[in-house]
Length: 127
Image 1 (tube, rainbow, N blue to C red):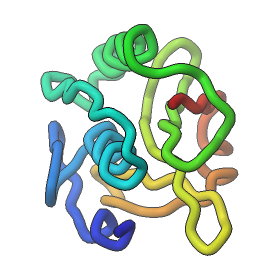
Image 2 (image 1 turned 120 degrees about the vertical axis):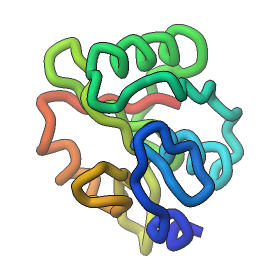
Image 3 (image 1 turned 180 degrees about the vertical axis):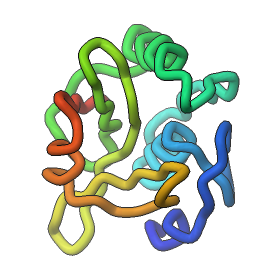
Image 4 (image 1 turned 45 degrees about the vertical axis):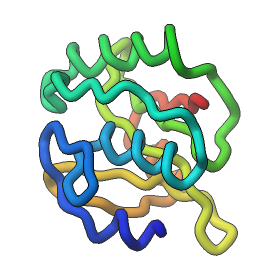
């Protein structure tokens, strides 16, 4: 099923099933692969507007998510200071932890969890 997500395209405000932005992909994977409740779409959030992304992340943390240890299906929020800059979801493939993410430059990809964490000052996991 992860292969299906890797064949999608990046699109701002994308909520699937063939085009996703980073939040849309994490939202879909969390729900479809891990059976978690479907999060609000936040389709009005512009991915390049990090303040707006941070407000949406704060709303999700206040109403839908709780901090957790890194585990399959957990949302990975990447922070620079108090600003949320990116979203992914933790998956396990062949016994290894990966972050499934997408962005305009790369499209969907699997990134080793450690490599994802090394790109940002702070990465937190939520379920």
